[in-house]
Length: 113
Length: 115
Image (cartoon, rainbow over all chains, first blue to last red):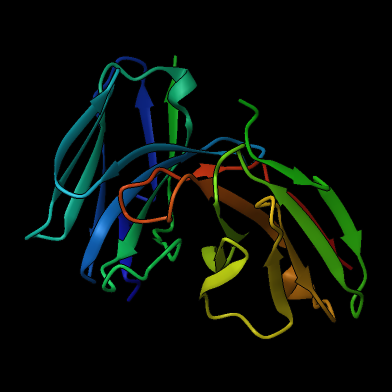
């Protein structure tokens, strides 16, 4: 079993729909990242969370440390949101886990007009 | 500010050769991390450098090595290439110590094909 699991693996939506991508992890973490990867490979960091909730435009990320679960929500989805979304956990290793992210397998999101 | 740059963007090598990839972080960023992305294994952590010191290493064989220069630019080297080393190699930089409060900024990647 992977330390970081995402669901669903594939997600298809119609423009305007509300989208949720889930991420569960089995290790203690100091932070969780949500990343977006477009075709061609470039990765953009969307959020970094250690507790609570963050919002940026139509994107919302939440994390529940006790339940070891995080969600990424996209409101009013748009075709330009089509990408791979990846969650990545930074283990809680006494402050020495520099860069040592453990990644989920990614969720392929396709939003149709 | 210019983003993270990686060179070359594409590379074709044959088995047994070695390769060196370069990463220039965002100006002022001191931490550089390297990741490998393959269709089978997804993204995996290779190593992280800060102030010319490797602070963390992932579970990769010794054929994978790296270094960081005084200007924070970093290189990674893969010796004795194998077919399985074909991948997208990404580097990411962050400002301070690469601690949990820091966002990582990713480069566009170097796509390596080993024949």
